Structure formats: structure tokens, C-alpha cells
Length: 324
Image 1 (tube, rainbow, N blue to C red):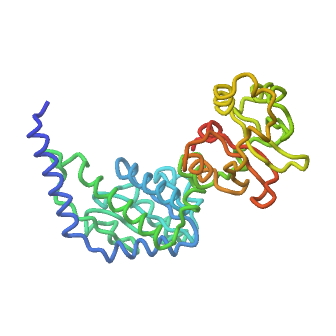
Image 2 (cartoon, rainbow, N blue to C red):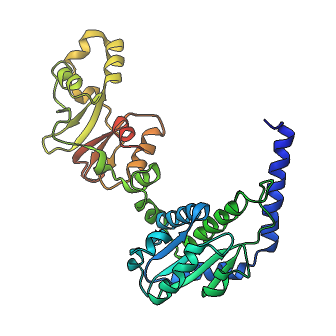
């Protein structure tokens, strides 16, 4: 295994090759590429073979996740029927380090016959790909880091830099919002934090531990312990939330008053100004409200803060289980 110094030398060399790219690249074709993607009324297809194919597939996936309709088209399969998915409103982006990949060159006349606009991306400014595509994006490459200048370990890094940076430029051009981004990532933590509302994760009123303000604590103990919420919600006859009483409150009251506290009413023992939320609030906002000014493990959900009519309960445990 190489020494740390030798490894650092490799990284420094790679940095130099990437610096060459940044110093030599012409940004106007990159801008034209981004504009073509933004203007595309159909699907943006990406195609490539080998390592370039994997990179183009990854870039296509990045565009999809950031709001652009895109698909990877295997060039071999395209020549055996899959090109049928391409039409005149589409854009076909062909990735090839050399610009001479046989499968892509064969694909060009058939894609043109379908009416698609073609963009070539290569590190050879005088390649067949550059000649035959309507737009060519030249990615300057000094050489590969590979000692034989063969394994595509610098060219692929440059292709990735190009694709992912352009994807961000396209996001900005389309003014993609955080909510729109989240809609494309519903199973991820970001998506859940931006999409889920309190009503999506709360416990409904039915089954909640409830009691009236005139009930004695001794009569409420079963309700407090059997519903698994760590609290009881004190409501009046119209379902208006009056206060809350928790397991912690029970321990504190027993410590202060002993067994006599069991004969006190819930109106005497409850916390009368509970922190609440509403069903249409974001679930992440409810989680944040549980943290300040002092941590709590639940929030009653009310229809509105004026009527204070109880509609549910959201718990920290439930929010964590939801992936927040």
C-alpha cells in the first residue's frame, strides 16, 4: 500500500487535472445545454456506454429528483426497439469520453429521424459526436490520473461535475421550491419534514385518555395509565380542552401531598394553559414546539386556538416513528 505522502501526491495530481478543466472549459455551451433542458417540452434522455453510461444515468436520476422529466436510454436497447419512446419534443444527451463510442454514433441517425434534439458531451472537440450533434459540450481533459492514461478516473469526475452542477443551475432556472423538492422525496427525512402535517401523525380523539374538570384523581388513574399516552386531557362537556395532567404531575403531586391528593379534582391539579397545535400545522413544527421553552412529550391538537375544541393528540414517540 502507498504511503500517506504518495497518496497525497495522487490527490494533488488529480486536483491539478481538475484545475485544468476549470481553467479551459467554455461556459457558453454549458449554458446552452442548461437552457435546452429547461426548454425541453418532452423528456430529457441520457445515454452512454460503460463508465460514461453510469455517469449519465446518475445525472438523469439527479435531474428527475430535482424536477426535470428524464430517463436513461440504453443505447444497445435503443437500437433494438427502445428508441420508440423518443419523439420530436425530446432531448437526447449522449455521453462519451472519446466522442467516438460506436453504439452512440449508430444511434444518432435514428434519433434524428425521430425528430429529437441531440446534444453530445465528450472530451474530444473534433469527435464524430461533436460533428453530428446539434450542440456539443466539450469537457477539457488533460489526462487520466491512471498511470497508463487509460482507466477513466478523471474524465468521469469531470463528467459528474458537469452534470451535477448543471442540474443545480437547472433547478435555479426552474425556481424549484423546497416543497416541490420534498414532493420528489416523500420517503426521505427531508420530504417527511416538509410534507407531513400534524393530522397525518396525530392520534384521533377516539381512544384518547380524557376526563372532566370535576373528576377526582382517584377515578382518573385507570384512564391515565391504560391509554399509553403518559397524560390525560381535561375537557368540558363541549369537548373544549381545559388542561392536561401527566404521569410526571402525578408523581410530583403525590410527593407534595401524599395520598390525600387522590381526592382532589382535576380542575385543581391540571396544568391549565397547555401548549397546543392544530391539525394543519406541519408535523416538524409540532416537534419543534415540544422542545421549547421546556421539553414536553406531547401536544394536544385543537380545531383552533380560539375554540380550543380537542381534535387529537400528537406525541414525540409518534413523530419519531413517522421518521421525523
